[in-house]
Picture 1 (tube, protein in one colour):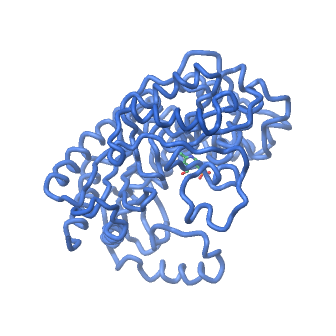
Picture 2 (cartoon, helix red, strand yellow):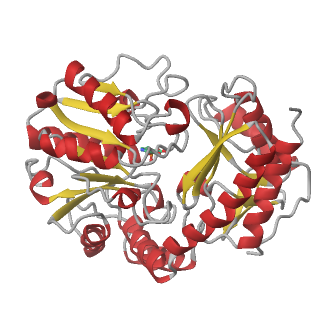
Picture 3 (cartoon, rainbow, N blue to C red):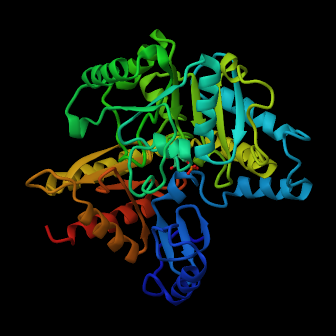
Length: 438
Ligand SMILES: Cc1ncc(COP(=O)(O)O)c(C=O)c1O
């Protein structure tokens, strides 16, 4: 696909507007979309809509198409697989690609201990299963999660998710034995990693009791909660505390995994080796696949038949994953994420120097964000954030927001985006911010 922004109609154009009308009559209003346009094709760093507009993609379908949408190796692998067989169910007639994905994940995830893997379909399902493994392996029930966490939308994972609206509103009662502690949010709490850790540990100790805790589940860089990078030492200290108390550390790398942060996994930035890792999103180039990889003795503590699912590790998704994982390594997409970080952070920091509404610039690799605030009070400015995102959308750039307070613009470009296209997308976003009345 030609890699340039093209605006042929207003955004949304007439065909998208017609689809929006059909959608309103057929699709639940509870399912929301960021963009008002409907996709026709996508690849590299662009998405083409049904009106022929070509948009710069700074979202990757929420951190999924890191290798690009319809990436050539993925297309080829899926095409070959779909002609061979589409499904047998690994629990009925197993196949090699599932085993090969498990071997690759054992090699790629942090730590050189013996590992085992189970495959699932969605990120939430991976988190649910990590909790099942942790409980079965430790014989303990409590699960500790932190402020600003996002772990999914099923009953257990929405309970583990921090933000009420829209994820939990009206959906209770929630799952039992889930406890929340504070995390590390340097821009807001001003604490060092050590100070933040002391606060987190005090809450767990006094309100849950270390001996009752099966696992602490944490995103090494928090995603939906605001692209929050913990202060140095927080994560490593938490890992140490977990080890000392027989508590399993589950790293939810569903958004941060697979080269996204300039390392294969975000835990590597802190030298942390989790007991269990949950993965999804970037694992299979857009096909639905998720995984839990962990210490062999933990993963094998669950009785036979205790983990699984009809579609878990579907052969098309496994074929796509093997092609995707090869692409990360052969095309050095970890290096590409680091190059994106250099290009984008410099620009964002320069913008911050001239605009007091940019309260914070943060992130790693190609997972970068600006937090927008009221310059006089420092209060989160969700209205400004929304206005900037919508102006960028109208100008042909897909940009997402996040944050517990809805005041964070997040950048998640495909790692395959060209530097000129990325710079242009960034120009559009920063121009949209500059154009908003201060
Ligand atoms: C850190 C994290 N965990 C879990 C999930 C849930 O994944 P899924 O939407 O595939 O269920 C997400 C999705 O955004 C996520 O970012």
